Length: 388
Image 1 (spheres, rainbow, N blue to C red):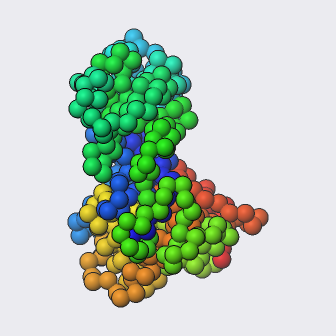
Image 2 (cartoon, helix red, strand yellow):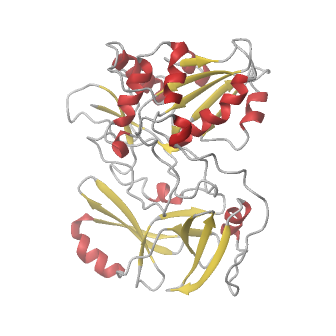
Image 3 (cartoon, one colour):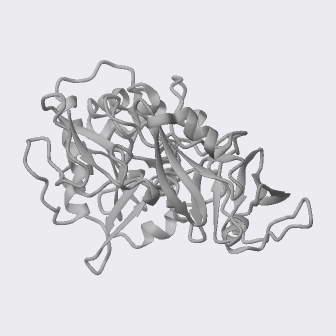
């Protein structure tokens, strides 16, 4: 299988705590190294849509309420919870609980409803690691991992390593005293996933997506030119909208209304939420929506993404979105569905798809808009789109 290098934006966080844009990250195929096996907090942001046969509206939780700008509630006083890296979390409406200092880092619990995650805040206050510390010293981890450990050096003042076991990768950050390690993701004050940058030079750590058939072992080298399903290099697209217009999509809504194209993985919880939030605009005649199925989460759901995408692409353009919304995706795929999915995968690669949902549209002035992830204000986004 041919692997096309994709840049992704993995999210570790709560749906109501926006550390980064909410999207299901593009991940490796089952025959390739997966995305970094970074630990998600309890009740982490949804990566996959449940596979029960009930309607989509019943299979996913209601979208999180709009983030509140209210300051964080301090449940345990004594620590400074106003440091820059925590401000983003508190502005998203989370309640912060200070657990005090531990091995040179301040432990903070961020809560939103029944969900929570544990944050280890660096002394600078400008970065933090989301993850649960492990009762292992850095030296002991190196001993256990042996040749599977790759040293990443100091990152934001913390020593860090990548541990590889077979095809699985895990990043660990050591506490300042080296007495504990944290398997997790490091974030900065802007909500940037620093861990991706830290592992960029590790072969196989950056995820790929399979979009074509070639002889086994012909993997695309990291950083090499992207190739299409036909074997040639994928030339930079004229525009994401032009690419979306040529893709295989389901459509709904009046043709004269503002037109938005949305790349989705049928198993992506954020893609489902985006559809749920866009449907009222479609029903009101204010949106013409095109949904482009791709399969990027197979490694997380044992191939369910591909199966559902094939089922969607076996439907007519008019019936595709309704079938996805109802969860009516169990019929055998049509003969042409596999080719359609490969072409959609090539389209996704050509625009550098980072994850789903990804929305593209054309503005009145002729420029194009794009958002990777679930926007906070879909209504405002649609208001900038034109028809056609």
